[in-house]
Amino acid sequence: GAVVSQHPSRVICKSGTSVKIECRSLDFQATTMFWYRQFPKQSLMLMATSNEGSKATYEQGVEKDKFLINHASLTLSTLTVTSAHPEDSSFYICSASGLAGADEQFFGPGTRLTVL
Amino acid sequence: AQSVSQHNHHVILSEAASLELGCNYSYGGTVNLFWYVQYPGQHLQLLLKYFSGDPLVKGIKGFEAEFIKSKFSFNLRKPSVQWSDTAEYFCAVKDYGGATNKLIFGTGTLLAVQP
Image (tube, rainbow over all chains, first blue to last red; front, side, top):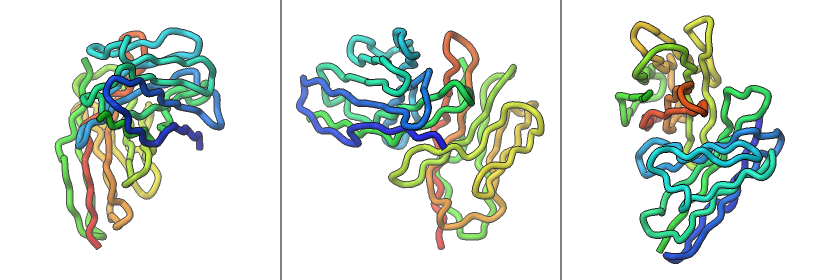
């Protein structure tokens, strides 16, 4: 099946710094990538949807200047958490869908962000 | 807006017991429905999906789900669970409203199967 990777798997940073998380589709071209946030014992909440070569579409309540998303190629999307604060600590998960089987999303393993 | 509810937050079963996890979505029209599973320490994996046709959908690892349009439900079932089914299960609905076809997830059900 289609494989999606995320890097890093976990990151610890100081408050005020920026952190970049990469999401790659390894064996297919992802026209659309999604970024989710998962709080402990809660569901995945969609943060934004990105299409290759265009600006991301953010969900209501998600600060686009804080969570910068870039989808520069058909295999890579990045999420940058700018000026991170402890309340940004969470599990961030990306998913990707491609041209074939566009109705299905393939999920990455997630990135655990801890902001001190 | 579309929403998804999973009524069971935590289920504990013994091996060989039957499983049914509830999932309801908020409004009708065209829906695509999914069940995902997240094993401990692993990423989300698709168990099964319903787009159209036979409302009884069979997925991997012996799971099945039934789409009942009149009840806005898509319950997950397995006749005999195994210890290896211990995981968190998420129901999701694809929302065709707006500019993007996004998945709306339920809050998840944590299943613990005791040997």
